[in-house]
Length: 136
Image 1 (tube, helix red, strand yellow):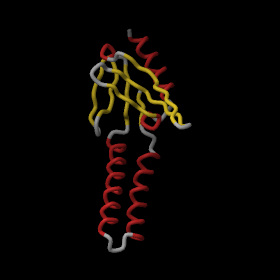
Image 2 (tube, helix red, strand yellow):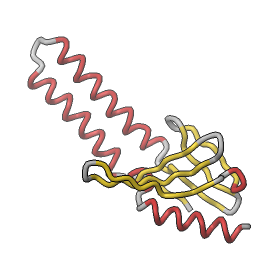
Image 3 (tube, rainbow, N blue to C red):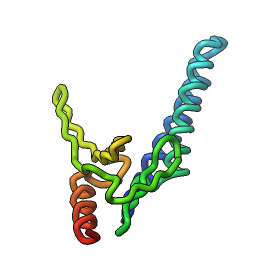
Image 4 (tube, rainbow, N blue to C red):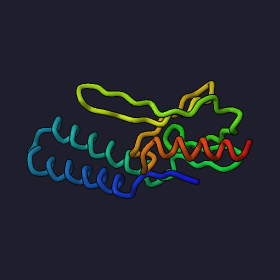
């Protein structure tokens, strides 16, 4: 089982980077500050999209454990006995609701959003719980 970033996300980020460059060409003129800000934002969006292309699978599970992406694109293998808790963290702030899948591995906590998983965190938590029960 694996959960990955939807393909529309890196495409949207790359389109945003292109849009920033186009806006810089249209409005920056000879102002070096605007050019620098435009370049920084465009590069940041491109690097963010590159992460989605290099490591699209953010979470994978099998009978022995899970593999998570940590940092930019590094993968870490966690055995089931290393995972203390899997839960969905729900928060509401100023009328906005967010859900994150939380994997507590004792020394680290890994958080995955709906965008990281390509599906609802509740579905992933249920699938992980079922797999964990079947293997123990």
